[in-house]
Image (cartoon, rainbow, N blue to C red; front, side, top):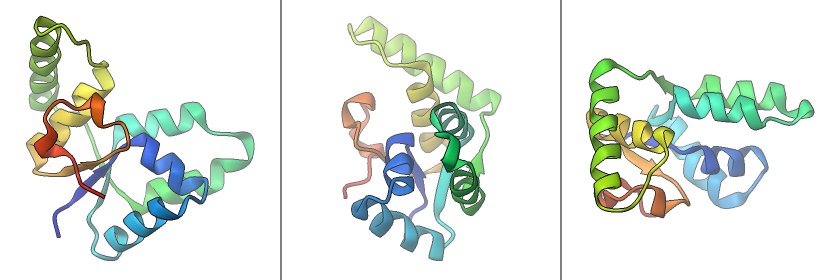
Length: 125
């Protein structure tokens, strides 16, 4: 099985007990294939409710965390410029997550499919 970069929306769904997210993520953990961008770590902490810290930290610790390298930042910047020229503006975080997946050979698990124009990167679930 290929490693999967879990987007923040899917991580939140898991943390809130939604079944599809559990069914997706638990097998990834079993194979050490669940990855999380450091940017999703930021987003999880930014949106965390007061009573969710322990569960959120356990989730983050169970995933392989991916940092942003210069090469990933370079690729994300190019993706942002390219999308802007085509008339759509992606968020910088989504560009960095897409570039991380591309650089590492990961699929992205997200419900926000429109945020990622390169559909080859997306995991079907």
